[in-house]
Amino acid sequence: MSGRQIMTADEIRRATIRISHEIVEKQAGTTGLALIGIQRRGVPLAHRIAAAIFENEAVRLPVGALDITFYRDDLSLIAQQPVVKGTDLPFDLNGATIVLVDDVLFTGRTIRAAMDALVDFGRPQAIRLAVLVDRGHRELPIRADHVGKNVPTSREELVRVHLEETDGEDGVVIDRLERAATAAGAPG
Amino acid sequence: MTAASPDRAASAPVATAHQVPLVDAEPASQGTTWAHRHLLDLDRVTWPEIELVMRTTQAMKEVLGRPIARVPALRGSGVTILFYEASTRTRVSFEVAAKNLSADVVNIAAASSSVSKGESLIDTIRTVEALGARMIVIRHPTSGAADLAAEHFSGSILNGGDGWHAHPSQALLDLFTLRERVPGGDLHGRKIVILGDVLHSRVARSNIWSLTAAGADLWLCAPATLMRGFERWAAASAGVPGHGRFQVTSDIGAALRDADVIMALRLQRERMAAGLLPSLREYAARYGLTLERLALARPDALVMHPGPMNEGIEIAPEVADHPRSVITDQVTNGVAVRMALLYLLAGTGVAGAGGAAAGPTGAAEALGG
Image (cartoon, rainbow over all chains, first blue to last red; front, side, top):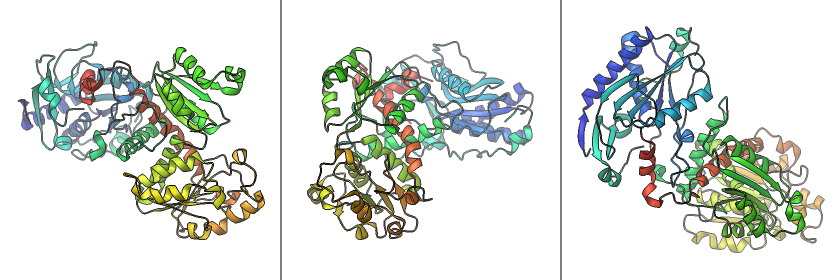
């Protein structure tokens, strides 16, 4: 991992557990809750939050995966189509309280796309948002309900979340954009 | 899950933490991107690119299973479907695919357009471009028509079949169907027989590229008059990088023996010059795919046909309806494959997209978190 580390594996673990408590507290229980991770790194995070809720509440919440590629608003601006990673929502969204889970909240455009996608699947009672890192610079009126860590950044910086499931180790690093662009294994 | 049923929520099939079946394991080809502005044939498409089409098709199949089978990926993009030849499944399949991606679809049938007044192909392409098309799906009875259209169009051309030359979307949907249905999804060493009117078949020609690239043990079987020239191609095929060799034979028994897959081709009577066959009845008797002939193949062999079928000529009705026939799967998968192709091609015809600077990294960052 190159760049400056802003969250360690332990900090990620504690933040995930705190978010799991907040989600249950806000809902006053687990009734009607479902977690949906945004591909890619939101998916393992959603599974971790579900595991933490199971430890404390002995309830297994349904967990889904959402790929927002087809709902991006910049498909006509970029030179090559992003690789699609797949959507799997094995439960009924109608009337459920959906907690969207993603690794980094930045412009808010991913979340806008995710909400557009969700309403094509059904009519949730509510949609909430949990993110590991909020780095600011919103371009849309979107905010997170549950945040692991607020990190002030400049637009020239890149926040990279590494998770064991996808990257072999846990950690969050901040990097200059020029350097990150040349590094192998750029983020999705 | 309904809001008031915690029990159902609790019993829903949920993966435990740290077990992430929904995320790809990132195979080596994950980094492959689609770089072809047009899709004219599969001869210049690499195997990693074909696998990218297969993965994208899988995602499109998931979209087709949604309550609203429509995503906004191509919103605002003009797709014109320009067909100079009769077609039901390919034309409708492309139209449904484009609409599922929210594209603006225009359908032109040559018979009812200015083509019937003598407008040339090039002029028609320029007109369609001036009317706002960003992608054209073209079918034409002349081999090479799609290549010619590509020379005169600033957007993307998707070949929906040109003469005897190529039908790439059909070959890709055949490959997708095979990978779904062949145990393990791997065609390496599988004996695949293309049976029938190879000479007039663009489906066979495109399938030769993709099936040999997939590592299949490919056989072509037809009367010698309907396979002219293919012996030379077969002899040269061993030396083509990225593609394997294939064999030709007129001995249907040798071809079908222990086959894993039999792909019957339509006898193209409208393209057939007189004298290639003694009679239709003789052809059906000697080369038709009957139940007795199917019994020569492996017990789990699959039967395919690109359609439309002449039942009773190249394929017996009871073979077409056989439990091992995957002909309707081919039609269903056709929509998903064409959605994938339209989606991938849409990313390459963007004027002034910043070239390499807006590669995958820049693209991911442009959307942000």
